[in-house]
Amino acid sequence: MSTAYLADISADVLARAAKIRLAVFDVDGTLTDGRLWYGEDGHEAKIFHVHDGLGLKLLQQHGVQVAILSARISHPVALRAEELDIAHVYQGQNDKRACLRELIDALKLQPDEVAFIGDDLPDLPAMTMVGLAVAVANAHPWIAERAHWQTRRGGGMGAAREVADLILTAKGRVTAELERWR
Image (cartoon, rainbow, N blue to C red; front, side, top):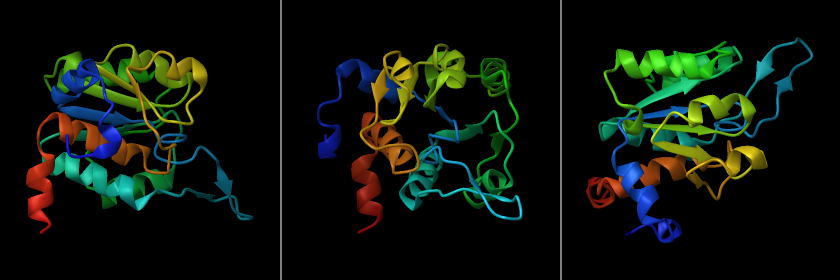
């Protein structure tokens, strides 16, 4: 395995990651650090990590579809998803499990071909139905205890990139990706 920080990944997690064809990310606390930023004018701002964005693009380039699934509705999320060419964006979804079930059915996937990455209780129903449930480092302990794997980096601080690296490593795509950049 060429990514040193992934060297201690269990065989079970690697096997799960190798099957992934769809990676679904929560937003607040997962693609962001979980803090909500409001300006004096009431407009919301979000901070996204550039490493996470590249990780999501790399997944797409290697045949893994990416989706965003959030209980909140946020214009900055729509803008970031558009920038990253993410076609599957679901905001205002209070029942993440039902939304995810519809997406899995629409894409004709099996649950074990899906990863869900989250950080708190609203993510748990979706996490329990997929092949690879990931909690970010700053996830609530109840979620972390129920995940197949937990990132070292927190939400909005490179956790999504860790997930992308894990999946690409498990699929044997790291060497090809590194060669592409030489």
